[in-house]
Image 1 (spheres, rainbow, N blue to C red):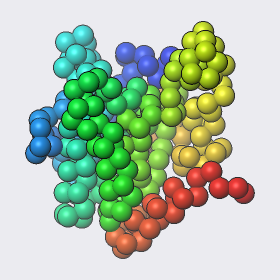
Image 2: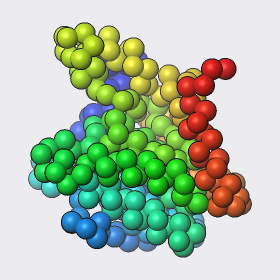
Image 3: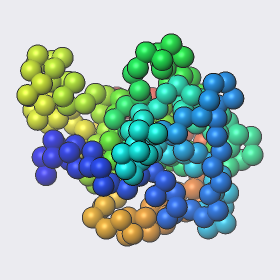
Length: 257
């Protein structure tokens, strides 16, 4: 499948949302709301859950299921309060020694005037900085679109996984084509050059694992099994070791072999 075809698949309105993954992998999910500064952003869902009896903090971007819910959730594009809510929950997880699992499917952070006035860039930057040093394991899973800083703000993790048809990129193919080639019709060429597919990113060392996604139920079973295995290994480490491992992971990206 060509890169642009994967982009279209990742954007499909029928792709399972973050809440569906939470409901089918975890139990006893209790959603928590608000950033304690401005309000509650419904584009990001987060709270407490159990993974086979293990307490977990789970966070997900959610695009919505129909026209009404997509508008309410801003099509999965978070405002700064969404990222601040996510960071609040991550710090809470660190305090109570809970691992963090993030599900990411967003075209990017919301770029409206209100979001900029409330500090969108700073909110994303704070997440990147704070997540680097958190002393609790973080696993992030890209289930659809992984767009720019809006995705990275939930993906500074010890392990980053992707579904087979997901994409992850610094910019959309259309945006890249408009900037680099001055022609949005060259989006297909831009998609190939961006190396945004799961196989490309695995080869580059940006992600650690790819999960097939033809059958949603089977994908959830595979993710649950992998999470249990990986979290058992990560929670056996000290908090300082977990944070240092995460820092070294990102320092190694782009390094010459």
